[in-house]
Image (cartoon, rainbow, N blue to C red; front, side):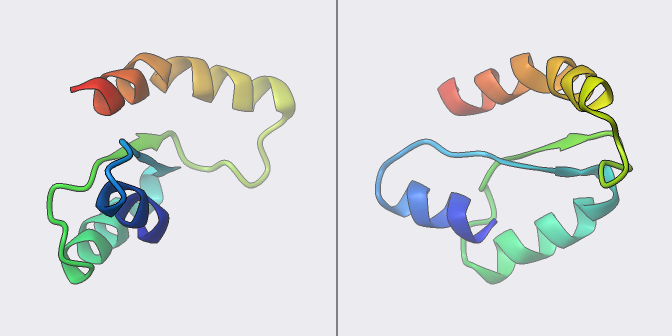
Length: 72
């Protein structure tokens, strides 16, 4: 969320992508950083042990949501 907030302050659209396990952490961080509307998109947890193919599937599942977050 820190990077997303920094980019947004610079006037550049940004979105954080995180594992669904970290939803509450993302909400807490964006509020603590003073940007309660900072956007984030969650991918299915876990990701640490995902294969390349599984990661591609996770990315494909959220790519439209990321684009929407960046362009809306």
